[in-house]
Length: 248
Ligand code: 5RP
Image (cartoon, rainbow, N blue to C red):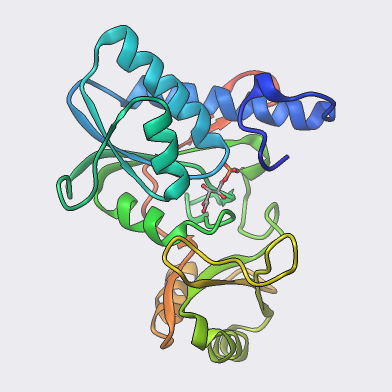
């Protein structure tokens, strides 16, 4: 379903896929309505769920004449901000954000996240770290008791290209599992991030102390950032299958 950016664009998809899109929209609209106010600096996340949040943000800016400045977390987010006619800024001009809204690949019981399914984890973590409030939006499929129960693709780790083999070996020697270089869909070459780096997807074997794992992986030379967001999310909005929104 990658590339489908709005519920209204879905044609010929399964009932489950349509439900998930509706759920993303519900979560996104609820988060924007509850957390965005006039005169805020807002971090804009990446992925497919954030598209709905930017739709709603633009609608509210138009209708309520809100003065909002947006800081993107990726090239995709930058394009979304511009396409919606929102005010684009950056961390040079706005290093203190009021709120950042972003999607997630999986959320566990203690609001630890796996992010980076779209490869934007580094800028997402930087922007979230600059925000007073970091709000996550997701559909019900991302809601998990423990990481790895729902998201099967592992923890993304952004690495400097020349270091992907030693980093992969260091991660698996210490923590087990398998850390695989993410390839482009065409298989013509590796995925290259907005920061010109590669992504390793570390498929871990069992639950761990994610705070310690995050710190240890970040210490490996060549690692730029991990997709483990520990102690960062303040609230998570899940759009549910029954049309409700669950807030954690
Ligand atoms: C990109 C991300 C996304 O926020 C995450 O993959 C969720 O994406 P989606 O909203 O499409 O499910 O971390 O790097």
